[in-house]
Image (tube, one colour):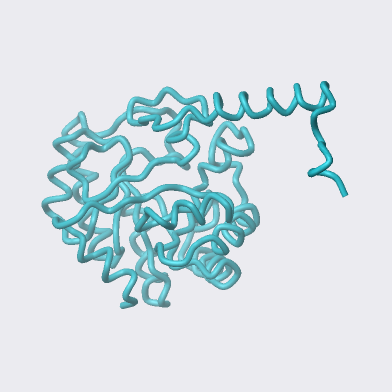
Length: 257
């Protein structure tokens, strides 16, 4: 197993894993200084393209953004989401995963689901394609946004799915919007790291959408903490630019040839 993956696995129960999303080289180059994992998430559908769901994101779209992100990463593990309808069966998944890996030079791909994608994940890993799992809220298939794990049957299914994914050979599992005690239980009972998003600090690591973190994306999800008000800073900069243009202060002599 590559050194990058071993470093992630070694952090289990020892050191928190830091993860964020990126969709371009410039952002990725900044995140690379602080992150263990950078995910090119299909969340770019809503964040960048204003799509109603991630289902509208295409394979080519993911590949182009990932090629840009790759240019900004030197040390972090780079993972790319396989978009909706690109892994309906093992054969389709293998073909598309190979395309993603070869064109983007990423380190791994991420698939949503448990038992339903178990054989598919095994096929990818057998063909030397590392996989990150994703359980709990599944944006590609869930019709409504709600946290998971309140009902006993739902809890049992997610627990069983986590063990299945571990058995399949994933190197980590994203737990999205699941109840705190369930996240804690899964994290304690599987050997691979869990990466939480709305799944408590009991997970081995955390991930957020970068645009949410900096306050660029107008979301009010409970699990998001805004560490910056970048919209305010952008507005200030554009306002000053506008004033300078109107007052003929820009471009000055030093900005001209």
